[in-house]
Image (cartoon, rainbow over all chains, first blue to last red; front, side, top):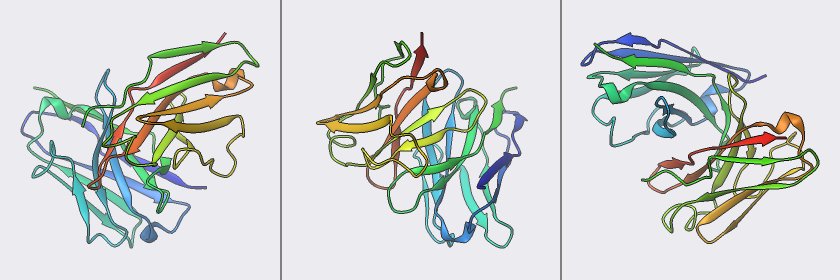
Length: 119
Length: 110
């Protein structure tokens, strides 16, 4: 059974940093593109970042470019999102997603980890 | 990109069919046949129910079907059941490695 378990969320002050993790199991992690999306309170989902299966290609939404870094450890089956210079508008539930592979959809989601940026 | 537009809520009685629409632009929904649909029960992880506009993943009920016309994608749930009560949101590839999501539609089974 595929499982994606996010962790690392919490309360952080504006300008602070946080690292999210997503522990993956139940599939061959190193063969799949992985993604992060987020949902701010009362708002819709926003696509945040992606990383290729081997980690060589990354994508960032304009609103997080230069502040967030996506990475992965294929030896430990973990996806990361390093977030720095955090702002209030980064407050959201962050989801880790597995790419279904080749069809531009996401076949498994985690349950999310909440990041709150507030003084 | 702007979010894809969905009605906030739709309701139907058991056994009925309902259709949820997802309206984008000629740069996302209208350009790519790469709309996916997700079912989200509160407190659980979202579940993929349609991909590439009209394809169902293995194990997803045939009561769920997808289609597209112009800049609008649609999800139809036939034979509505109590367990279908959930939030449904769409997602479209929008080019340049990015995706845009719908605003979500809450389905109520009366």
